[in-house]
Image 1 (cartoon, rainbow, N blue to C red):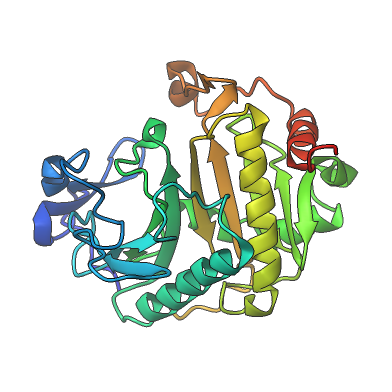
Image 2 (image 1 turned 180 degrees about the horizontal axis):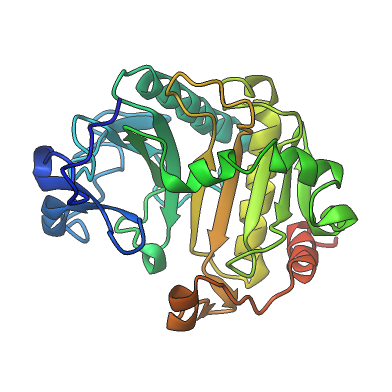
Length: 313
């Protein structure tokens, strides 16, 4: 399905928009060089292009998707997904009915892109906040449809069995400590602080039942909306300021393989480790491949549970 590598040089055929796929000969790391993205605008010069009546949303909408004008992948395999017509909302502040619409859009776009013969994996993600590179504050995410399964989800899929099911049952390396790290649960979904997080308040959200993808988990859509809202809004209340974060969804690949170990889940990597203090990844971590986390996951979970609780009357 994916094009073959070039003859010993770690490259692949050049795509549209100046896109080259490369493999670092020293580490084996995959890199996509997308030269034309260097010319994309950092901020809109006038108005918001995602608000109704704007460049990308000329008509009223509830949720909306469109092709990315500055795609790092060729052939229409990158999309922008608008979560709400209201500019000052965020994914965590949306009401449950609106979150259900977002989840339905995620599910529909995953299915449609995944049915393409040149797509093996659909990655849904959101960059929230200028600190993580979001150039427009309007609530939105993106979709990248890869021609092969990318390294990060592939590493999870190759762990042997289902690591998430083991975690949820208390049979994983964390053992019974899982319950101490639960932040929110309900409707067949659960959110918890990761056992070995790279970021102090890093979260995993997963379906309690073993569903491979969002389409299969459709009966639990309301539960996902509830847990997503609870967890993300708790992050904003944690330091009484909007939390910049990176969010992505891992689910079953669309390459035709069975992938029985695939268990749909979300990762949330919040950027701040204290009020207004970013958690920077330093050279000692990148150089060693080992992350150093200053906040214990069970402590982080307790703080987030307190932040998620409704204020006292």
